[in-house]
Image (cartoon, rainbow, N blue to C red; front, side, top):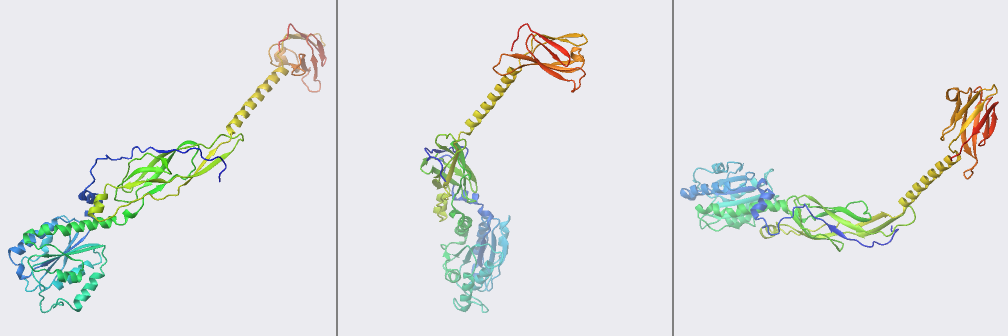
Length: 488
């Protein structure tokens, strides 16, 4: 509803102080700083490592392999789970948490490589079973380490490199509920198990052929991919959320009013920065304003609204509605890392909050009316007091009182007080009083109003008005007013 004139002027100015805007030259964080802020090491991941322990690995090669794996395990997060699957004729899986002593994980490998066969199919079956366990993390990395081809024993379920059992195994792997799953073949000589690995994990990659003493460096890639997968699992959903904006619900008053516009970062991990803030085309301080992860910042906005002149009526409300949409650019110091190293697109926006705001002001002259009423009451009180004083002038002179028995009393008259006629006050028995009065406000005629009862009873009470210098008889008693001069 609009009951007043249009909004004459509107200027919104945000004073963005105390929000911790960082220096413009500060270098953006690197990938390791982002990982630390995200706490990726607290997100568990599965590492399933299949190790060829056939006779061809016997000797120094196997010793170096164990040492390289120990270095690889030491680089993992304590919350990660490692499953070692040594395979020869058979494959047995052992799962442990990395914990605080990752070097002990290699104890799950046999002391020497002495297997008569190399059953890669059995190793892959054990790997799929491990990944499907009920408490398995949703992030997983599979590594196949071998120096030879598939050479199964006579009792193997995978005597060939294809067939029904391979198809069943591939089907089981396809049903794994994983948010991220990577597989790598690491050939330790010219041969590689990559073709069989891809039968079960179609997207498996092959690391460059390497000598066993360089295995730790080669395994850095699976470790880096696992950390990146952890980061993506934490960020993929939250980076799509818009920045929330909320305005105060109450109406905006006349003149300059400071409004707290609340801006909330919905992302629990990613810090944001607001720049170039504007409201409905008006000037707003540009910031920048830092929005820490999950934090809410109140942006003070000063609104100057002129609702027009005051009306003569005591009460009159002027209302107006205007669009006050907060716009601006939302950036993040993490943008380069998210886009270039994690493959995530960060494009946050300010959410379009309801922008129709109500302006309301009381433009009646109520206080003028109240002031006038107060002044009028004060004038009435002054006039009433003046009239009362005018009609009851001050007493002057003296009154001589003579009773029928010849007793006389003289009572002085002074001020505006009532003269009480009593034995205690004047020595006159009975009761009564003497006051001065005028017949009207504008009259100069002054009379003494005398009321007297000789015995104090109402039945014997009499009254009379005595002019200056006159004598009146009240209830058998004579009252004479002697005056020098009268002041009223």
